[in-house]
Length: 188
Image 1 (cartoon, rainbow, N blue to C red):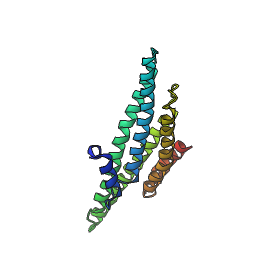
Image 2: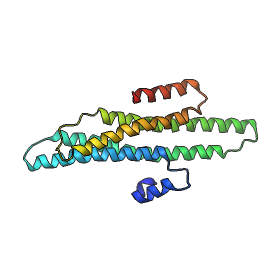
Image 3: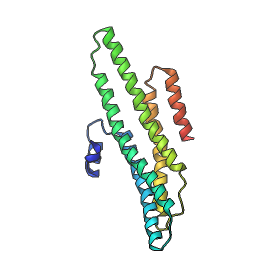
Image 4: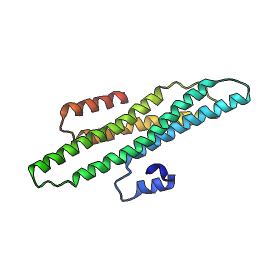
């Protein structure tokens, strides 16, 4: 499991000859780091306000939202790896009979749908994060939240490549268009 790896171990795996983890998993990790930056800015601001005797519970409420999104990012990172491994498993299926060929094709199509949905869900998460209004932050951590928001934009922009890399393999044209249309809407 990726969650048990250190940052160094994860990046070593990312750089290895293995096909997983890959770009989709890395984008989800980056989004998780973006959530953490915004969450930290909110927590530091809350801590400072408490020291000054100011009650700002909205800071903790928004921080909790980003905490939940951060946890989801790491789940999506794992799912990205799992869906690609499932594609590899389908590709190993025998194709000696027509029935086996059909089973392999059905297996692959199901995997391509799932592999399209993971980056799409990451795009939705980044879109939600960017749409979440942030309360005024302590000036010394505002830049951390800004960096987090820039990372969300980067992940949103690049995740569409992973959606399209999988939808281009779908035989169901309606499903392909539906997934691609949703990804384009999120990018706009």
